[in-house]
Image 1 (cartoon, rainbow, N blue to C red):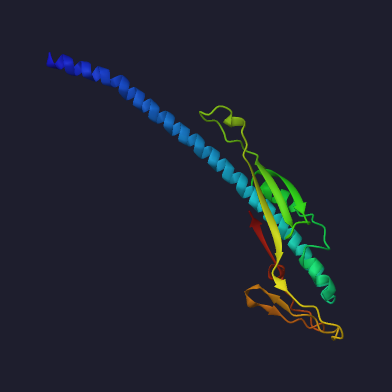
Image 2: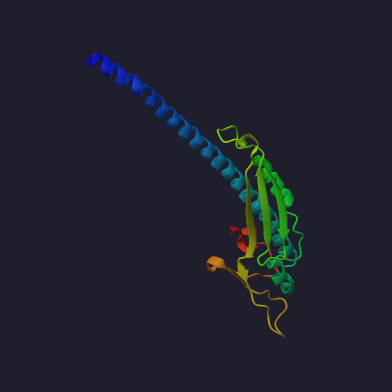
Length: 201
């Protein structure tokens, strides 16, 4: 009789065991689906960040070239430092970076911002993938990023009657100053010396 009861208890426990295991498997698949979605979102955010920075860096380099061309005319410096004088056409570079991150982007330049910059919305080419959540096989993640271009240097224009052959000193971040000699313009600030490009909230 004792054996029969033990056998009966084991038989009753087996369905419970199956239910528990099934629940654990379902939970594991649910966590997998969440992980797939998170990884897809991270890919979209990485693509957006990289694309926005690439667009802003492209324009930063153009602004630096514009400043070099006008280095002997300090009255134009501030406009250039504020993002003026060049076309904001860095979205082509944003497209390239997005493609390298397996995504597509919508890129919008904003030269009117203060500081100026770019806003990018990226969409992953790869979907979240098959999971226990219906519809994820066709779901693509979308994320956005904004990058801005800020001047790193200040200067003071010479007053009336000042020697026009003397250029203003550039006083830049980190305590770096540039004294420019119009007769020896071989050592000029680089793009990263003049402008800071970073992601904005």
